[in-house]
Structure formats: C-alpha cells, structure tokens
Length: 69
Image (cartoon, rainbow, N blue to C red; front, top):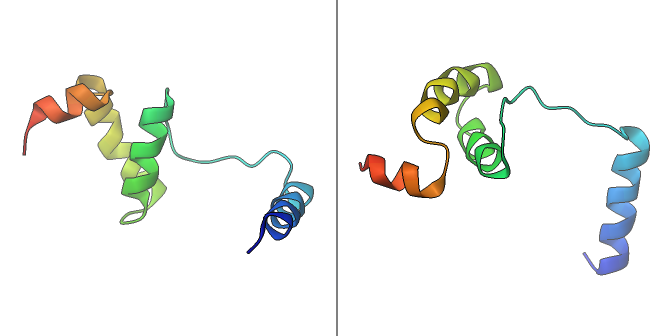
C-alpha cells in the first residue's frame, strides 16, 4: 500500500467507528502494548485476568525484565 491508500484505509475505519473501544484493561501505553501482544494468544477476558496480577507487580519494561524467566 502506498501512503494515499493507507490514509484512505484509516479514514474508512474512522468513519465506520470514530471511537473504537477495547475490552483490554491498561493504564499506560506500555501496558496496552503488553496486553495487545498477549491478546494474540488469548481472549481479552483472559488477558485482563493475567495482566491484572502482572501489572500490580510489574508494569514497566524494567520491572518486567527484572522478573526474569
């Protein structure tokens, strides 16, 4: 897709749903990114259950890294 096609694509999405909502629960851009990555493998409900506990103890890249494997 070229730039003009991308612009038209996003304009079409916006006109169809100007205020899209997600069921994912998040408080920061990092939390949203993490939840979206997890949602590729699970339902939003399941992701929310996991991230509710995860984000309580680690909600930044450094804190996630510090958890280890």
